[in-house]
Each structure stands twice: as C-alpha cells, then as structure tokens.
Figure 1 (cartoon, rainbow, N blue to C red):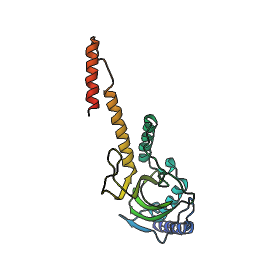
Figure 2: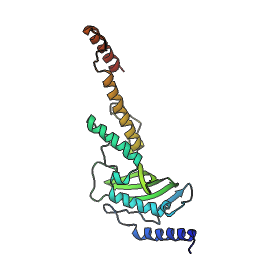
Figure 3: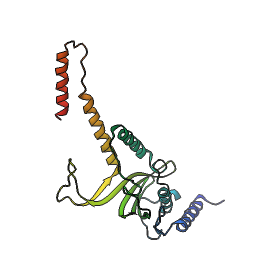
Figure 4: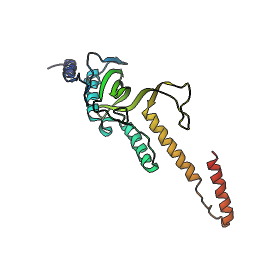
Length: 233
C-alpha cells in the first residue's frame, strides 16, 4: 500500500499543477491577474497539509473573489461583528460602512480587476494575503485569513490609501497627509461602541419619576439634574 507521506506529496504536487493550470493571467471582472510564479510566499511554519499550502490558498482566494459574498467568504467572528453593526445601523439610521470592501470603493468600474501579490505568515490557523485591487485606481488591500470550517475565510480587511487625518468635526488636520490604513474590524468595533454609548446616555437622560416620590415638582427637578449631567459630558 502507498504510504501516507507519499500520498501527501502526490496531493501537494497535484494541487500545484491544478493551481498553475487554473490561475488566470487576464484582468477582467471577477478574474485574477495573478501569476503563480510571481506570488511571493512567507511562512512561520511549514504547511502541514495541502489545504495550508500557498497553492491551495491561492485557489481559495480566487474562489472568494469570484463570489464576493460575506456569508460564504467571511469568518464567523467577522460576521458576528458585521451583523451587529448592520442591525445598529438600521435602527440608528447611520452608516457603518459606506463602501464595497471587496472592490475597495463606492463606485465599481466595469473593468475592475484584482491581483494576488503575496501570501504571508501561513500557520495552521491564520494567513495573510496582499492584494492589488484595480478599481478606477490601484488600491492595496491586505486580507487576514482564518482557517475554520475546513477552509480559509476572510477575517478582516485592511485598506491603504494616501490621505489626511481628520478631527472630530470632520476637518482635515494640516500636516497629517500620508499613507493611511483602515482596519475594518476596528472600524466596526468602534461604530458599535459609539452607538451603544450614545444610546446609554440617552437612556440615562430619560425622565423617570422615582418610586415612592409623590411630589411631582421634586421629580421634575431630579429629572432635570439627570439630563443636565448627561448632556454636560
């Protein structure tokens, strides 16, 4: 009988041949312009099975970018945050994401394309993929990947762009221009926290006549104090 080591080596070889035969070299919509020979790879430990090989991850990313569907392409952790933020957004009437994170922009060029530049830091449970999204202009995107449910899923999106830092009023801060990074998971966490904090302040400021307080004037004065205290912070 064929040994398990030989079977594993044959599986990796077959996966490599399949990758090079399937990897596209064009740049049309939903097609990768990555060439397997040009992708750089770094690992923190040697892949222990074909599903953790750079070839398999390359194929998985190609599949992800053909689907571009959160439910089937993103991790469980990501979807918990995304669904919570979306629920709050619908209730609050504010936006938590105002762009398409798969295309890295608000508007979509019919000729958009994507290119896998490198696969880095492969472990048994995580990896990173650096992409170039061409959607009207080049956009660097880094995907945090997590291995769960028998495959690789996107656990976070990192976007990089030239721009400014902004103050609390939305005004650009002079001298702050340069390469900026947007961490989407942190953006969602911050949005959830901000909405929750605001709702908490509004609840604290709600007029509530304490139990046992029969004097209406005293109740109103107590309520006004609570409102003043909540709005002064």
